Amino acid sequence: MRQDDVRQLRQWIYGYQIAQAIHVAGRLGIADLLAHETLDCGQLARRAECDADGLRRLMRALETIGVFRQEGEDTYAHTDMSRLLISGAPDSQDFAACIYGDEHYRAWAELYTCVKTGEPRFGALYDTDYFSYLERQSEVDGKLGKYLEHDSAGRLSALLDAYDFSSTRHLVDVGGDGRMLPTLLARFPALRVTLFGPQPVHLHDDADGRSLHVGGVWHSAVPANGDVYLLSQILHRFDADGARAVLETCRAAMDERAVLLIQEYPVPEEGSLAPGRWMDLNMMVVCGGRERTLGQYEALLEAAGLTLVRCRQGAGQSAVLQCAPA
Image (cartoon, rainbow, N blue to C red; front, side, top):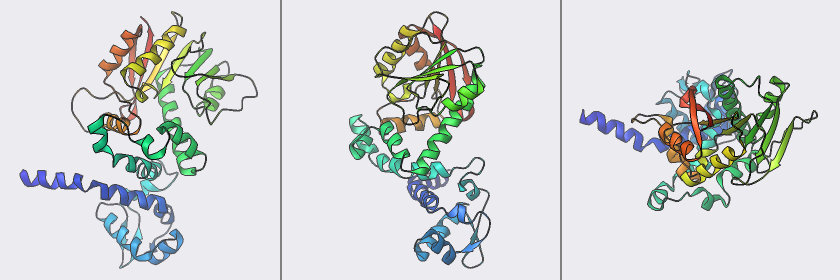
């Protein structure tokens, strides 16, 4: 048992090497280059515009964890796992490999300082807050832009599975970035959407006048007269006081029949390798926010004059919390 523990712990200790090796393969586009043919390292290096010996050593290491397969002395092909790095493939992890191995990786190198001080480190490294950085960089980094579009599409799919918007006339998306708008407006012809918060980079060009952006800061008055209010991965950006303040501004805008939808990743109450606990640590590093247990969300809701009606669990432990005035 002890030797098994040693092997497992050492594997996790050296996990930074594996994470960076997969990240580099993603940035070089190796999976795409091998999508339809096997290539030797010389051919791969020329097409990826990198050093052949360096690439050979990278591929040799990745083969040990089932990412790519060596065929012959110097030729490589795909495994089922490496095919998940092909851009645009079903369940592709290409975006994650490229994005999380760069800015997130640098920020996580500051985890010790975060734990010592309780303060996030992303802003100190990049001279701006995390979410502003993502939006700004998505304009110049095509892969990051596609990743954010992919993330938005996944959140919208989970949202539509959890709630029927067919009778909704006015949706107020608090803090929305505009990426959900085209699908929502196309799917629900009677729906009107108000985006509230900072100016979104991806504001939909709406010829029908069914969408509106209202500028404002988080704790100012949220637009009234909404049937449904949406906070999609917004509350986890804030500490308890900030999250409660956002909920209170939403409650102040809601009439007694309005619905509040909260989309987050609740942390399991019991220990496991659940993504919520690691996402919580990531939020501490990048922005000072936090993921919460369902019980913690219920406490925040109660403090803001709201109550949880139901929780719809989705893929990957994501959840949509349907709330109403208390």
